[in-house]
Length: 233
Length: 285
Image: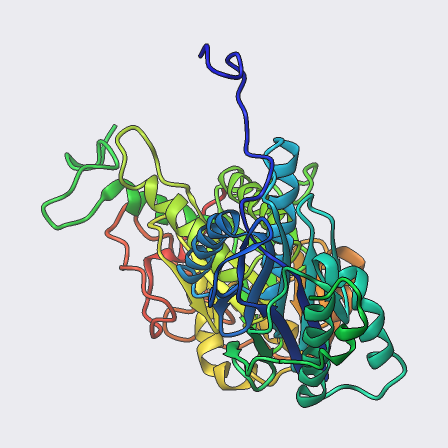
């Protein structure tokens, strides 16, 4: 073990190929999740058309920002959970997966080997009163919370206020309104986040909609104001 | 001391294709005091008859709470039953720890089935000498599950195990169509009436020897003893006891003579039609 690090065990403690923000909004009968489809290698847009939303079953979607390789590991772990539930005829539900992943993320960070991801768990929670939408957010250190809307990465700083303004004190959103808020968020994201892309997906899961992820038309936005920015070429 | 040359170990087959040690364990279950489980679409109920070895002795605990949404009733060797109840409690707690929600009853069935079966296959082990009735309520609704030492685990609408339990099953079969839409109190009444049918004419249910448990929609698992049982017994006191039916042995008929020990037991058949059963002997545990 006389290696470069003098025999100490080491973990990879920085991400390599990453995805930027995820934004999700709860509406009256479901949840909508937005993520773009570019994989960044540092600041460079290394790969395109790569999804960041994993459909677990017809009522749960897990979306992530952060390291793609770490998420592949998580995807594998989630798949094994789905099988474990399936052998007893059960369907993994969003709150169970949320609780499980929270513990997993916290356990990994305690071993000084964190998953470099922020996770968004979106789903429809069946219960005896007809069910309710579920939206959970888990950080790479295992801090977790449920919310009516949430965002990861730079969007959590830039866009949560925009979404809050759109949703607070309003009558319940419907799916169309939720998706239009997400499109507006994409536009603001590509203005402000140099890692964000205008090619994106919206995943939807709800009372009547089985979980599904849809590729969206790219948003161009209005760049005329950029001419007034002296640093813009 | 063996009854025949094929029962020296649990792994030994008889030429008839039976595992005699497993059959003996099923007999142990049939000699335990009776317990009954019934479910409706929204609730599940357990009732059990507790025995006391003598006047100075307290009654043996028959029903265990496993979690807020499920519990188990035991017939047979109660010390074996306690081990299984503890094991199920651990399973419930472990699932809660992992997923922060109650364990589906189907998961408990699976685990219990595997645990029971292993003891019928390995040299040097013995089967658990108990049958269980698990009552639970989860996303899939109310559940009654019956297990026995041969590792047969089955979901039931209603069932009973233990001494003279055939009489209780006769009652349950006759009233099966009423259970689905019964209220919890009605389920308890049906369960008590069927349990009463397992008693010989000179005995009766009392607040001391009867335990009731109920679980269901909006109702966490609750065990009732003594004073809480009394009103439910009062509610059925006016119902006349069923007269003896084939294989029943309850009511006016004199108690049947103890069946010979170790006779080939009837093969386990969930909710099988009433048949004069060899399990009518009332042995103490």
